[in-house]
Length: 229
Image (cartoon, rainbow, N blue to C red; front, side):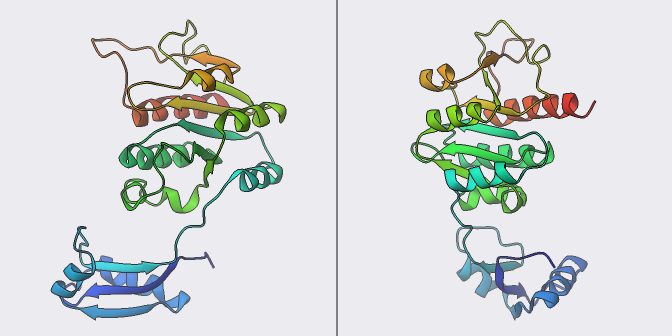
């Protein structure tokens, strides 16, 4: 039986649709308490959110760090496939990157602890459940972690519009960590120096860059395509 962080659920007594019934059924095997309340009570419980007729109490996600990353990599059977976000501060972008990373088959998302978004409630919601399943590793020294990955044989590939090698020319099939930078300024100089290779995303039109979550999706799914040929 899958482990759940949900401990209690409050549902609107005014809703009797299939979605509410599915929540009640899913809660039964886990002995999760269900409370039927009026909508005003839900509004008080979640004053800053659109609860859509339901509120759940959950245990917090455990913070994961370099030690957890080492264990994940040690336990992998195949080639590592990682997404590294260098200072992404918008939780909407983080959540979207988590969603794309899980869909593309990545094993973890890595980000620095400082000057970067954590898994806020917004990031969790935007991830559409991906953040519950895909490890999010926050590290104190990103450059050191990238060097450690290289010591494991992981090919660290950064992204920059100044590169002369396109995404579609890069070899993304082996042990891989794709590095994307923060909104607007890209990857930092020290991070770029830790990359084995830098690539760019070919674009037409007048746009100079893509939103980081869009760029992550493009890069991740090109890697997915190459790795599954």
